[in-house]
Length: 237
Image 1: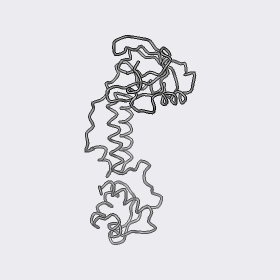
Image 2: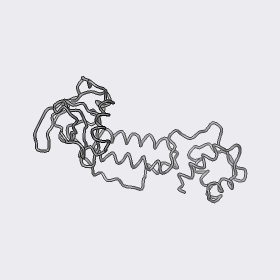
Image 3: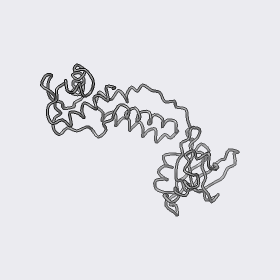
Image 4: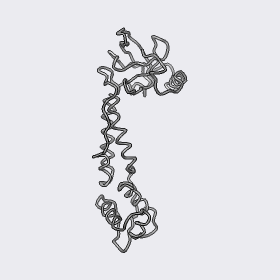
């Protein structure tokens, strides 16, 4: 068992105990040596976890203390770290900035003994992925989807043909090679998927969809058959 998981389990044991627990009992439950328990207790105390007691007498967790709301196991911490770092592949500057903010907040909330899993992770996530759109503001598109606002875009297809469209955006698909906006297109009177790196101009309109976003999403999912790879089931543009 890794140290971070062991510290988490140690706190859990002390939280549910009805009285002092000796290091020997803790060592047996955690399947470690008594000396390791002493070191772990000292590490938690240094991280301001209110454990009281002494070797030979037993340990208790001060009444009223509870795990912080952002207490995770080592695997959960690493999952968060990997997931947030993979956002750099989306090319969405707004999401990347939000991910860094999330990591900062979680790092501050974690006990010192667990912070290394975020501050010095032992893994690497390649930055290779979809190109960042030069014009399309993905943050603005996400807001438009949440508020069910139409977009007015100028778009260039793969052959360089330019069109102006009014679309009802319902989803963003972050694919490996491109980021797509899935939308109902008034020009084509059908669902279409627009590569954000081919958007030449974009304006968020004050006008709302004439139908609910949930209804549109249901129709879109029915059309694409629930598949995640939207590029494989519908034409772009």
